[in-house]
Image (cartoon, rainbow, N blue to C red):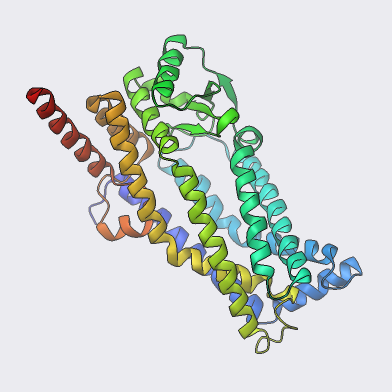
Length: 378
């Protein structure tokens, strides 16, 4: 197979992701159908000396699931998050640093998982029929809160941020954001280089928390023109409210997943030896069902995302009138971040949230040709 470096990297990453999907799905099926979930439920109840429906039992049960998840996930996490990244020159961090960040992420995910499990079973105690509606409302509220606080609470747990001292660039970017009608709190250097060789930029937060993030790896090697057009693309997502569209899509996934999970658990409780759909041992089946719904709808989610990305590219070109800067930035980002320049159509449909680099460059060149025609006609 005549593969370039980026194609090989992404193929291996996809293979590892597929392997994990199979392992995780098989483990959840085994827990429910093999009786392991009931054993964990009984163990959690014995450890807390409380009923299986008690909040303390739910917390212990969910914590045991999280520990089992990370025990299974860890070998593939090391391979994907550390070995592949180092092998293909994308990572600069030591294994100890990677492990520390992995532990922090695990603690965060574990806390959120325990909280989600409590929401589900408190909702079920309130209404066995409508628990999925109450749970969905709580999860959506949590999603909105996370979108608001993540930039100021969660990201600093993993990265260092400092105000950008390049006054000319800062002024240029703030002027760009004002032209777009998206005022920002400030511009910060994102300390990505301590962990990665990738370059990136982001516009995070909303309202009083909105801020520009430029990775130190981007600032080191890219021209001001290239950085400006990259930021213009990020501004477009806020102008077009793509973040809210994404949250709306996630809302639909949550509601659909929980509704289908309710139906599946109710139909399966008897054959699986569960004491009804409110049985704590049904939690892996709820997770399995919601994961299945997300997996089935992933191509649709990616299609929406690619459409938003194409629109953001057009907006960036219209705002900056700098197709040359856009094309050079895309080429450099693709090379530095090992983006797949020309993935197969099937791979793009199933896995890619962004259009291919070649398609984005071709669109910019077409925009430039049309813009030239318009200027000539004027």
